[in-house]
Amino acid sequence: MLYKKNILTFLVLIFFSTIIYFLIIKQIIYPTIIPMIKNGVINVFVDWRVILHANICQEKGFDTYINNPCSPWNGKHVYGQILLYIPLISNFPNFYFIYLPIILNLIFLYTVINFFKFENTIGYICLFFIVFSAPVILAIERANIDIAIFLLLILISKNKNVLINYLILILTTISKFYPICMAIIFLFKKKMKIITINIIFFLLIIFLILFFQLESLIKIFDNRNQFTGSGIYNFSFNGVLHYLLNFKIIVDNKSYDFIKYLLLVTLLIVPIFLTILFNFKKIFNNNSILNLFNEDIFENRAYILSSTVVLFCFFSFSNFFYREIFFLGLIPWLLKNKHLTENKFINLYFYILIFKFFISTVFIFLVMNNIFQSFNIFIVFVKYCFDFYLIAIVLTVFLISIKNFLYLQFKNT
Picture 1: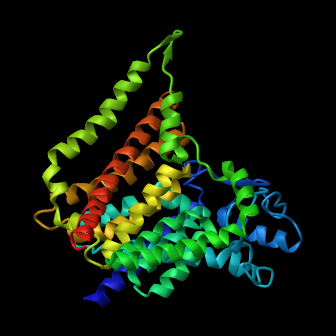
Picture 2: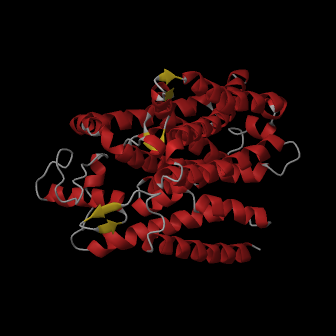
Picture 3: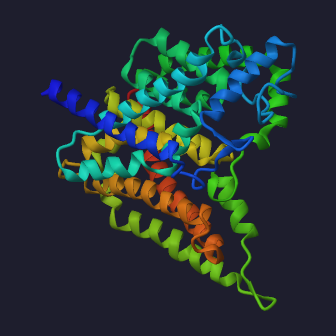
């Protein structure tokens, strides 16, 4: 049975990766995905190449946090110093610039495909919406380093060796900083004393390393606009708030801002209220949710890590929407539990997540291709509302699981 699933997964991988290859080569994904053009040529894997160019420039004596002329886009280095010590780039340029990002993209696709069991046609349809969603395609086309961090998140979820997880967490945190929130994995140790020791020791190591890189951190902060998404490309609470405050509806010099608030109530407040109202007992008394920290298994670990990253990034940073790929880490847990009779809410949750990838892609396509240009501001607004609606569900489940974890900790002391 496992052999057949591996073969099927591999065949689906070949099918999807071939389609993505032609979508990029034939430039069908553009301008939905903003093309990176230099001298009339569209360049792929740009996010990864900027890091490689920064390494090359550093060898030439440049401070790539300030100036990176080796990059065709003069993209300054906005990551940790550890990513400036990639060895032998000049010796193996084809491997680093072409083959390595392709390999990482294929592993990423294989990992996501492997989440699904392909029990029925619906599974294939859901996977199709995910793989060909704008966040996934953007991450693949740019070969963004978030793909590598996502894969390491999955590795941490599967691996229970503390030393290996320490190493992965330290390396990812000092490379892109937000993975520091993945220290939540230590809560699965259950005993508060062990949890406290692990978290304190991990944070001491991180803060010690960052202390000696303080100058670089200041320069990264100065370059923050380089990794801040805008408009339909933004995924963050800050983006939602900023857009809401600056969203003006003016006709013949008369303000109709009441329509904005009417839309906000209709598209966000009411759906959140109704979802919680009609699923109250299914959410707050759900054993699968309550036991998220009690069962130290891959699906639970992946869900907790992924939801923590999504929430941390959404409320802390202004992100490009490719960071939505961390929603994919919720899928193994959702698939594992949605078929249980008591988990009708989780079944709903799963399809809301899939619909989110589908509808976001539709909205991004409409805006970037100016299909209904006059309505772009409304489309972006609706997309933000749906982002926040899903985040509200993720946050609710997260808080319930944390609450139950703390309750059990204090109950046992």
